[in-house]
Length: 243
Image 1 (cartoon, one colour):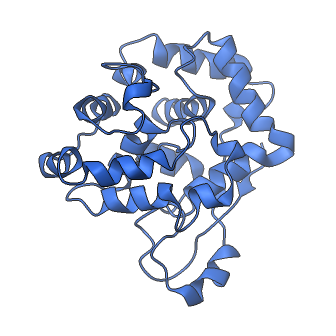
Image 2 (image 1 turned 135 degrees about the vertical axis):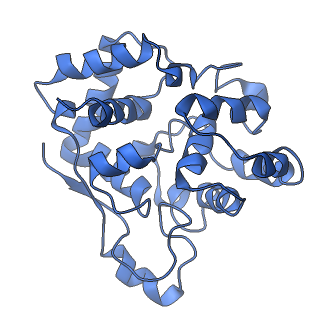
């Protein structure tokens, strides 16, 4: 399957705080926009491999993998009353993906930072898919990036934990990043990941986005499982179970 490229990489300075390159010096912006991370989408997500991809999905969501409960542990992720709140249920849900939010970070998230987090979440549409996201929703200065930075500044909240916590709240928009995804996609780090994934979903007249929707239907997954999560799970299962 052809690789897809997008967004920011190959720059100097501390850009590790979010996947789009927030907290950069203004003079670097033009240079950064030209240097894009390239995603090596696994062939199993390409045409003619649907049976294998569906098998990976049904294995993950129909087996002992605790991540199968990520979307609905405690309550569905899209419960209207809690869409714009990170609460204890969300923090526990992250643990189904084999990481834990550190205690000090959880205290801040549930306490003094709660109003700020909710205000940011209200500015991030829950119904927006990454493939349809405008730049102002995932680029520097957006509410999504500001939420990422706010969480990343907490003790013990690296890019993996941060991505999983935000993905619990906005799973249609924010892709999960961890060591397996990083290796499978050929990323150096999380910089530019959101934009690169959006580019991959848009490539070839949205071929990957359409395929993800088809795979979700073929695997008979819950509507709580987003197309973006389908892509994530297939990538992760490919990395954890190489053939």
